[in-house]
Length: 194
Image (cartoon, rainbow, N blue to C red; front, side, top):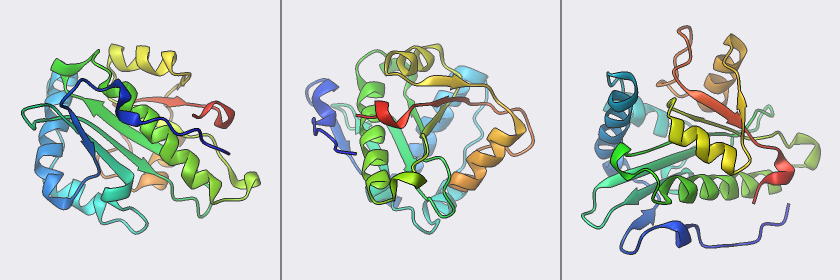
């Protein structure tokens, strides 16, 4: 899969920064997750220890597998993580969110396009017969749904199997195992990745 490189920051407003994560970013990331979750669901359930544990998962490197967007005041306003563990082959998983006050400014597009490119690079390291379509999950936000549709991602209905796949693919503690999935999930065909 040959990727044509385009700067992921081309959609960001001037003065915004875009970078990988360090463990020092966990508290501000958790704050963003809870802020987003409270705006959408009325309560925040993320905690620093869970995210720290997730970021210490083997084969996950926050500097390579997470991207953060900061505004001019250096407040975290966008986040995406990409899980590309493919042994045994599983769907690459992306999870992300944008601060509720910063929707519609190109941040979600920047993050999701970067995530697609990150998945493409990971797939290039595998034999073609092991390629599996990536899945993106996000809190159930109408703007995220519109963005996903615009970028060619199709909605995947929630199911117990989908929850198990998400946990298997990421080991993410913040994804519920038995309760109703509080995230919308989308899938994109490999041949449509940028």
